Image (tube, rainbow, N blue to C red):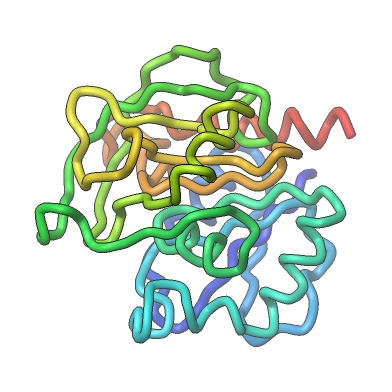
Amino acid sequence: MTRIGVVTFPGSLDDQDARRAVELCGAEPVALWHDAADLGGVDAVILPGGFSYGDYLRCGAIARFSPIMAEVVAAAGRGMPVLGICNGFQVLCESHLLPGALVRNDRLTFVCRDQKLRVENDTTAWTNDFTAGQEITIVLKNGEGSYMADDETLARLEGEGLVAFRYVGGNPNGSRNDIAGITNPRGNVVGLMPHPEHNVEELTGPSLDGQGFFRSVEAFLARV
């Protein structure tokens, strides 16, 4: 059975939700502590949402120095699938596994809504269950979710097909180019602001579209 680790930092909120989503989609969730010296032999890693270390300094800026992040960075370099959700996306950017940064929403308020996204890249470890151009609905909740990058980085992301998801029906936080999520060139590291772990059960989510993320990584790992 696929074993997917979910890292808990001080201040993480959605680690239990992520582990439940992993289990509901047929994999084995493994709890990983931020101070751990290894990844416990997992096949993939999720960095969940929340407010790691209270979001002091910048969101994710302290979490990047957690002992476990050295292991995550090394594993990602070897091709292990890594998904950063919301605060986890911020940690990935701070760790330089993904380019750019997440800053305060342009409307200067916390946004919580059911958000429509368009799948732009369906070839990554976390998106291959979708089709390019498919529109999905995923919960969005953030105060610092505006994706920023310089013009050169944006041109590279767009030119190389590294935008994974784009906001549809209005930009909720001022992200440049309506970017909701991106991937690295290898396709094993994906970060996005919306929360797929909240979209795996009819009772608690606006859709079941989040299941596609977890089915994707299982399919990816079955092929490697």
